[in-house]
Length: 307
Length: 159
Image (cartoon, rainbow over all chains, first blue to last red; front, side):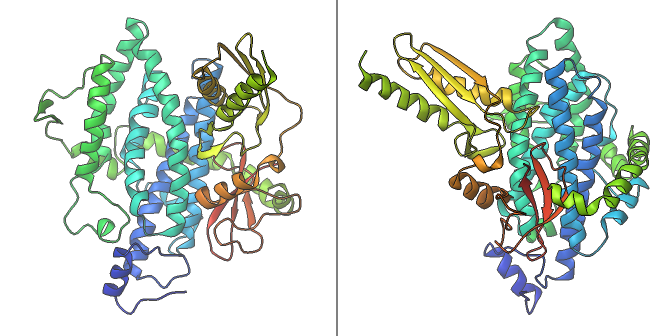
């Protein structure tokens, strides 16, 4: 176990690229900040997995079903790993985190507070939302100072890369498809573009602790811009129209219009367009699977041998 | 057609197929994973046939792996036709993962490969055995475990 005499010493350690391990005597503020960040990530993976799950029976064709099935398992597996890391920080148990999430007391990513109307929404999530998540995760991984989280992010990023490939293939099917398919994605894009812009968060403050303590490596504004520069030209190339009348190309860069932050604030209070239904769905999934958890607990010694 | 040239093309084809990476584990190849079962070359016809062993049936990455192998071979000079097939004999087990594959999975992804006996050592701190936590990890082929020594959740390739 390592310890630091002062917060300044600890920050100097982080600035030199030091990696904090669970047994270290880290400053309480750092522990709290890392915990809050990972709990939110874990909640979002779980809520994202449930969104994917809704589309297993609705996915067109066997290959798409397999892909959605795999993504569901992927997100739930990530949630499981992240809740383990978060619980290990000793602030809340895994059950407390789940109770808080299912009671609507904690947050999850804004993109999981919206309704999915059609298959094209699922494609928008697989392509646009996942790419936004990957952009932020890569930026966290780059400098992440908390060891166990950094190790999980390494795997999450590799897996998201694979899912992005599947997402791109699904998008191309709609983009190169019939007029109805093309228009179905255009409509989904109109629903998802601004939530994706919100996803990166409001401009980071100069004294953002997540940046100071090397949990994030880039500010929200910078990451949003990175995303816009990459995805605006791609979407235009596929013949889609970005629902932003102020979008313009100046000095070789794409600039988006002013962002209305009200919808993001609503999702953060769990009163977004679909928040109540999403949380109720998660609660039902948790309650209906109680017998599985009891059965697994009862068989715990043998479950050990299976892994 | 001389034996020398045939084996030369065969060697190139084998190397190209072997270098194809797992879509979820960059830098870990199908050869590291023990998935490359056979490469057959018919030089006269410019035909290459590759047999791959699926790690897990129903793995959603199989199509992508087959497409990547096909693409890697199609670019070779002297190759006109490529056939990639998944075969079910012999049955794939984690024992087929090579020492280099194990090293990369542990060092880069903190994923452990079980040996023939019991739980594998922790891929983070190499201490004794990790504790199983869930047979269901983020993919069909991985379980979740926890190292009580370094307190890292890790993943273990399932048998």
